[in-house]
Every structure is written in C-alpha cells, then in structure tokens.
Length: 368
Image (cartoon, rainbow, N blue to C red):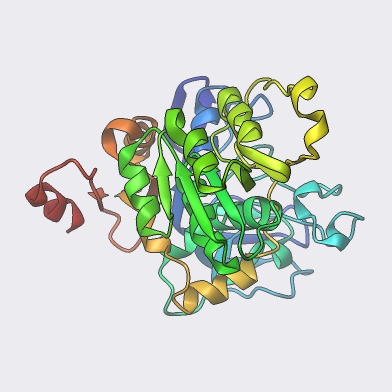
C-alpha cells in the first residue's frame, strides 16, 4: 500500500510500505477514506517528537471502513464506516477503567503516528478497536467527522470540561487554531457569559466571531480587554491553545483569583511559572492528554447539527499531494489553513476557504 512516511527530521514521503496486519486479537484494519493533518504532525516532521522513528507512517486522525477485525473485537464489523480515535485504550487497566484512555498502561494511549504506524495511509491497523472505533451515522461526512478524532474532544475535554466552564463565566481562549476554535464552539454549550478569543491572526479571529466569540483581541490588547470586561477581576477560565511559553504566562496573568488555566497547547520546551507572583491567587492549572471519551457525545451533537465542524476544513488534497498539504499547513499564516485534510470523496486538491483578505472572486473559486 501507499503511506506518508516520516524519514527523518524535515523529510516525509508518499511511499510503498507493507500492508498492515492484525498483531493482536483486539486489532482492526481500516481502509482510510479521509485523514487529517494537525500541528503535532508538523512537529513530528520537524523531528521534535523523539519517540517517532524514521520509517513510521504519520497521522492520528481518520475516517474509514473496517475491512478486518481480530477475534476479540465485538464492537466493529467489516464494511462498517467508522471514525478512528487518536487514542486507543485497552479498557482493562486502572486508567482505562476510569475513562482516562490517554494514560492507558497496556500499550494503548496516543500511539498512532508515534509508536505505531498512523492513519495517513491507504490502510491502518487500529489497536484496541472496540474503544478506538466509532460507527458513523450515514449523514455525517468524513470531512466533518475527522474533526472528532482529536480536535473537538481535546477542546471539549481539556479546555471546556477540564477548565470547569460554568454558566455565567468569562472564558478567554488564547490561540484560535483548530483546537482553540473548537473550545470557542463547545464552550457555548455551557452558557458562559462571554468568550474572548486571542490570536495574532485576524482571519482566525473572524472565524472565532462566527463560532460565537463575544470579543476578540491580539495578544497585546488581550489582558486590558479581559480586565475591562470583568471589572478588573480577570477571566474565570483561560485556555492556552498555543503551546508557547509567552502564551502560557499570559494565560496565568489573565486568570482571576480562584480561576483555572487549562493548558491544551503542546509545549516543546519549558515555560515559566512565577509562583512568587501567583501562589496566593488560588489558581488551578490543568494539563493533560485528550482521552476521547467524549466522542460518542460529540458524534451525536455533530449528527444533530450542533457542532460547526464544516467551518474548520479549509483545504483538501489528494493522497499523493500529502507533502504539499503539509507545506500549506506549515505556512498557515500565508495560506489561511486551519484544518488540512487528505483524501475524501473527490481525492482532488482543493482550497475550500481562502483568507478573508482575498477578493470575493478568489473566495468563490476556492470554495468550488
């Protein structure tokens, strides 16, 4: 089969590799229909995720069709169209029994595209298929559903639920890439008084407004805006969705005494925590990996039209243009990319939505 293979720092290629085969009775083989690229994949390509070895197939988000299941699989059948979660859980260990699949101690967790071959391929072996595969309603498109493999669960579980968003809260989201935007969208389900989106990219701030942000700001104005909106108290919940030290430090400054900072962004290096300044403010700082235990709930909401997943996919590429697709996401500031998808029904390279500063004719052409 063909697959997108990590070949070392900066090097990826669409290559012939061996077809995956079940290694355990709990495995399933899925023919991939649609896969997505995320910021973590860019970090892998740059060589910033040391557990990923050269020769590994990239990717951890996909929609496809089950073609083979192991003898122990009970919840998936060949021919079934499924969402592939970015996390696999054994269902037996102490963490999995609590629904904390990201910390699985029996070879599960976030393994696809890391310690096991991933989803950016014609076929993928999915460990612990009963918990990792989710049947898709017929009416749900692969391009929408693939957002529920990682993006929406991460936003909802780590940002909204982990941040403890409650009715009447002020929620600030620092960094409105796909996960930050999904925080804006899913926070609305819990009726905060206001949501403030913070980013350097004005087109992403425009998208945040469409998804329900009540106020937007660049990083330089954000703290003053939150202070003004809250009468000097600060935000009840601040979500860090950048993965940068300066963003984390700003989030801590923006939180009110007794507030929560939910760190979603993946940090590649240290970030300062000034305990000498914040120890007396009763702050809660939450970190963690997504467990994807919320996927069934999110799938029901998607099928009912309550999740704006179609706002997120900006570009779709054919499989053999995968390297080009990575470049488009890497240059998101210039290309306007949010979520870049491989495959799908057309297998054509398509720019679905262009940046807001492009002309109307260009936008119409890109949407075809």
